[in-house]
Image (cartoon, rainbow, N blue to C red; front, side, top):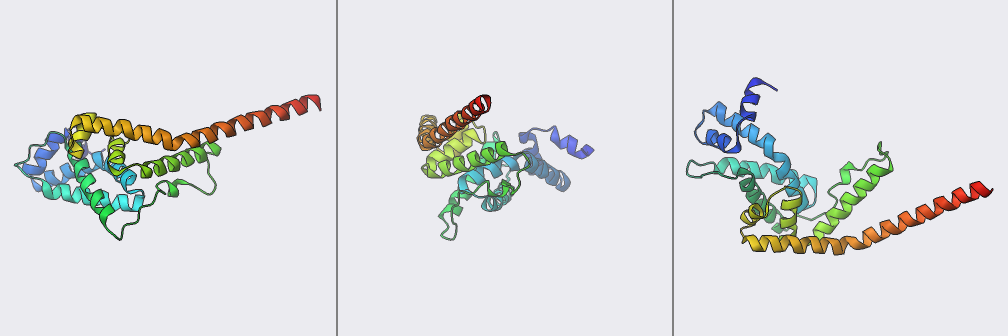
Length: 215
């Protein structure tokens, strides 16, 4: 890592934001680069889970950081930059979903599925589970989906989620509890099917072993 990068890497979000406000042009650019490197992955994951596909998520992620750059102000006291970025991301995702030309898709993990998967069946099952979860999230009411994505994929606390969504703490907590209950209901048939398949496979394997032993 270059020396100047190490210098910014050691700074907190609040310190980097202050450089955005009052630093030199070089300092502002480097501080922004560090913040982008630090938070863009989390913002992208949030956008992908809300919008449902990676192409739209990339566009949204870029818009988030453009909006953030334009919003930098000496009058703003920045105490939770991660939450602030996710609030911007939420607003941009909502605007994109309201756009008539935007079509929601649940194929978030599609490009991760390879024709010949080098990791074998376990990786295929993991992709299958990712697609099932993406579809289950898409079936949730919008406010439930936003709340549970912020907790499960972005690691926010209940209070941070309440701040991002602009609702009371008790409301954010209730939305997450209900969202998880909805997800359990949606995914229950899948788990039951998987359990049944596993039992059938074990039975077949036992029969094969029995035939070999007595053949």
